Image 1 (cartoon, one colour):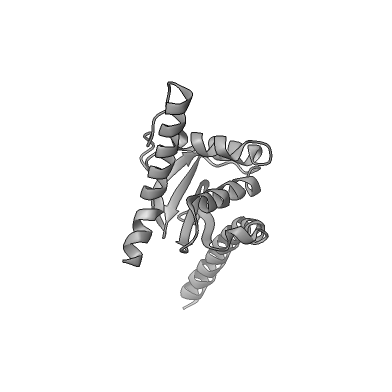
Image 2: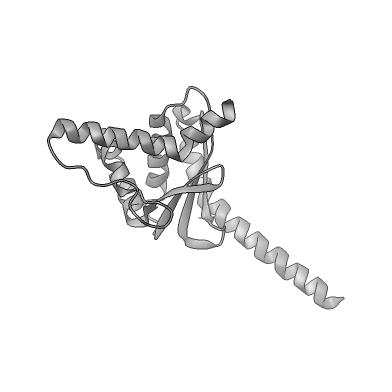
Length: 176
């Protein structure tokens, strides 16, 4: 009987510690996002992978309400990177409804956060997709080269395709 009680106490303490670590990770992100009323239609949260792996961050979109644009979602991601810019992650998973869709290298996510206040958001948006990887680590999109008009057009097409595959397609299925 004492072994069972000991096991339960250890399990509760361990579970509480895991909950606390993930809560403390998400709390400043939620506070920052809550200060910007434009973020209201985008519901997101962050946690460690499997809630226990601190080298991998999961950025999970739980809902994107009608009327929200892809720019709203991207702004939420950028503001999240700004809050977490002092943390080191190997990988940042881009998930929708808890399902991993893509990932980013952790150093690129950190760069997004450090450049948040100074970088032109249009440039960041245009070049974002070339850093996105499939969940197996292979590049999801290539670097675009050529004339500036063709490059910009292709980069924006990649960004749109990324949003479609990350969450828009699933949102459309949910509303049908």
